[in-house]
Image 1 (cartoon, rainbow, N blue to C red):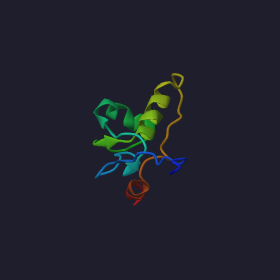
Image 2: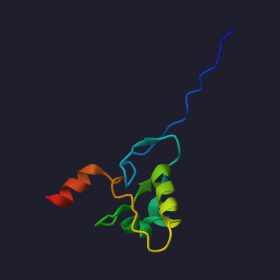
Image 3: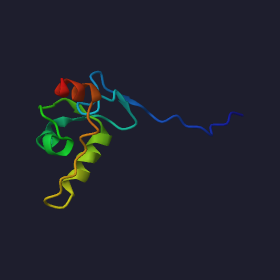
Length: 90
């Protein structure tokens, strides 16, 4: 008799990674970013356009950002891919 007490969660993969955080695997599916792209600059403080696949964690950040009170300056600029931040400061 085998015991199946541990269930390995399904992992979803993206060849290019999330267009925001560059994660290449996630426990949730990746989504086309078109629906969220207009909010990327304000939500993540991006200085350039991003497109491609977006992970569920970054989708949830966009949705949380959209619920902030009007006039709020909060953003998730610490979230987007670190190497891109270095390029902006050079």
